[in-house]
Length: 301
Image (cartoon, rainbow, N blue to C red):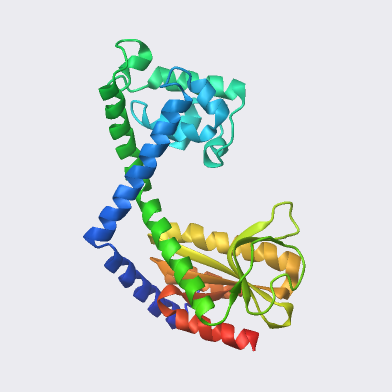
C-alpha cells in the first residue's frame, strides 16, 4: 500500500495534539467523569435487583445491568468470559440495553450468584445483614473497577463532543442553518447550506445508518460526515471500519448523491487513513477545520 505523505503528516500532527491533551487536568477530569458514570450504573443495578436479592428481575428489566454484575464476581469477568460459563447469555442484551428473556435471566442469575465476591456482598449470600457501609464499599469498589475499563471511552466521548461542537460552530459561523434531524430517504432532503446533527440515511438494508453531521451541498448532493476520535491505533481500526461500512451502504443506496467524509482526531495509523482515501472517502482533520470549510465552500457554490 502506498501511503499519501499528507496522511503521514496529519496523523503525526493529530497524535502530538492528542498527547498534549493528556495533561494532568484533562486526565483527572476524564477519570472523575468515568467514576461518576460507573457509580450511577452500579446504583441502578442495585436498585433494579433489590440489592442483589433478585438479580433475575434486574436482568429481565434491562440486560445492561450485567455490566455491573460482572464486576461483582470473584474475579470480575469480561463479556467473553461470562459467555463461556453462561452460553445462553448474549452480550447484545448488555450492549443494546435490551431486556433479557426469563430463561436466560435465570441462567445468568445463577452464574452470578454462584460467583459473587463474598468480600463485598456478604449480605447477598445471607452471612450478614446489609448495612449502609456495606453498600458504600460495594459502590466504591465496583465503580472503580468499571471506571478503569471505561476511562478511555470517557476521554473519547469528551473529545468527540468537542470535535462535533467545533464543527457545528464552524458551519454556523459560515452561514449554515441547522434542521431538525429526521430519516433522510429522498434526494434534496437537506437543502444547500443546511445541516442535520445525528440523523439517519435510508439504505437498501433494513437498518438505516446514523451519521454525525449531514450537510446539504449544491445539486441535491449531501455530505455524510463521520466524526471519529481514537485513543490508539488499535482502536482506530474499528472506527475506520465503521466509516467504510457506512460509506458502502450509502453508496449502494444513493450512488454518488451521498458523499462520505471522515473528520479525524487522535491516534490513527496513516495506513488506516489511506484505506479511507482508497475507498473514495474524503478525509479531513479536526486540527485543520479551515481545509474542510474551504472544501464545503466549493461544493455549495
